[in-house]
Image: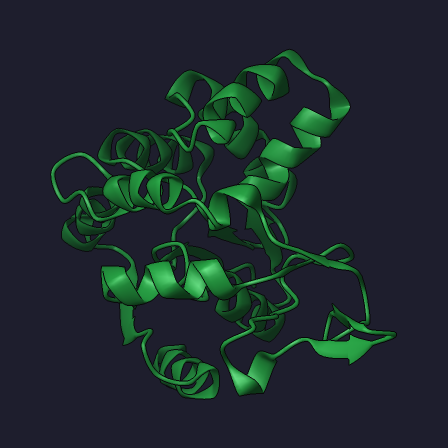
Length: 226
């Protein structure tokens, strides 16, 4: 049976890592909004070109660009089920997604929220490294459990040995602040979206502490999944 999940958590909370674990439990597609953007940007589509301008500034991509990208992808995995990570990022997007899911007859089974203090989230962002082969391979210079490994005098992915890089905006405290301003906004931002789905009912809400070790977060999530 297809299981549909929304995953929420501020940048730096590890929601990509946890999302990959959860989707494996159900055999769902892991739909990461950033990957959808990258596909369009790499393909040079008009939506991709417009989205790139906003992403590079650390700003929220407008709904008229984001929603068509995301909904098109969800429809492809209606039978398989999906875990959506990184969308919605605002209350308006949450309302639009909720309406679209109902119209398409897709039930939202779980809303997963990873809670993390804003300052801790910032520190985690600045220490993370991205694998060229798979962005969901966890690598972080500050955590022993997921530290990259050294090969030929340079750090490489601890999972596959792939080349590592740091996003420029991950080293820019101003850009990080902009992204977190959006997430922690309880009036119109991502936290408002989380609260919208909590109030809407019809889905099981799982909220866990993201400040503990990766395995502890995983155990807390799996324990609450049916």
